[in-house]
Image 1 (cartoon, rainbow over the protein chains, first blue to last red):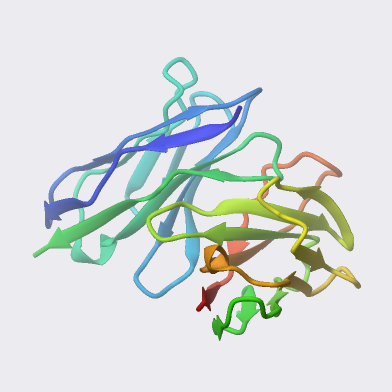
Image 2: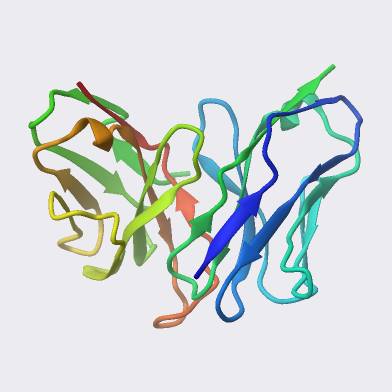
Length: 111
Length: 118
């Protein structure tokens, strides 16, 4: 079946620290992979995506590389800011219709 | 910028009552999705439409749930005889599918309707 496993939180980092949020997946076929972010009091927003193996998605200093051999799509950022505090969701879409989401990882960045 | 909107934002109801939620997608989007999200979990897929056709329904969608998208624009999600276990955030998303059945479209989410069943 299709599923996403995300690193459990909450994660607390100091400003300018390096961030990694792990995401691994199980899927049939060749899914597209996504990271969504949910800021406090707001709806889910697409952060980045990758549609095939070895693709790297990037946005706002965040990056994730689609690794088929390890079935992973880990989210990284070199230097986090207080404004990055949010809940991050990894998701996959095996056929472009239904999405499967992870449970979310809460990130708090302290000054 | 008119994103996905949902109404109401909050709904409190008593067990056994019926509730209906509305979703207005981004105007040119032909696909519309409903998800349910409970505390500490990611969104779970319920159903989706391509234009007015309901193409897929999750096993999570019991007979008490029904969704419509009569003119291929807005959609409604009705829950009949609500139960306490229905308490959750109901999310709507829309996308523009460029190909008939498969796509890597980005889904744009609304703010959600938070349902509390007492």
